Image (cartoon, rainbow, N blue to C red):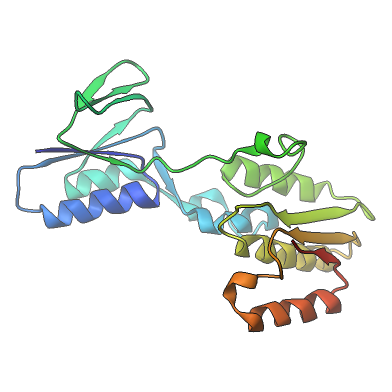
Length: 215
């Protein structure tokens, strides 16, 4: 049996490792196809702008990891899925057949969906954007206003709050004064996690004199 996994992030990596464990003593072939040769621990990308970590501490090479457990790794991107024929077509037109397919390719932000956002904002979604945000901070000038927010339908609101307070500490350490404003589509601050976190955040925002807008 041929099992193909597309993607090598949290989903793809865990799928390949767990399937290999369950099929340890079998002859089933497991193949991971990904255009990423390294695994990046993305939750820690928030540290990159603040110089507390470097890329090497947040990543490791995938090929040795997969080879160690007997998983084939193909460093290519996939351009087409052919589910009726049970094969995928890679960017160089190589065809790879399968009996079972796991699609774990992840997601990409739709920056263009919100007018004016694309190319004119900073983020920590991936390594390149986190490093760009670091450069922005290094060039930060006194008095420049900063707006941090959570756009509608974002399922991970917490990272915006974390970034807000990390940035506040970063600027205070360097004695750089910049007015900061926070916005969120939530009806209240961090409203999906109970009343206590909301109340604590309201107090913290008041102490740090950070105006915010909900809903």
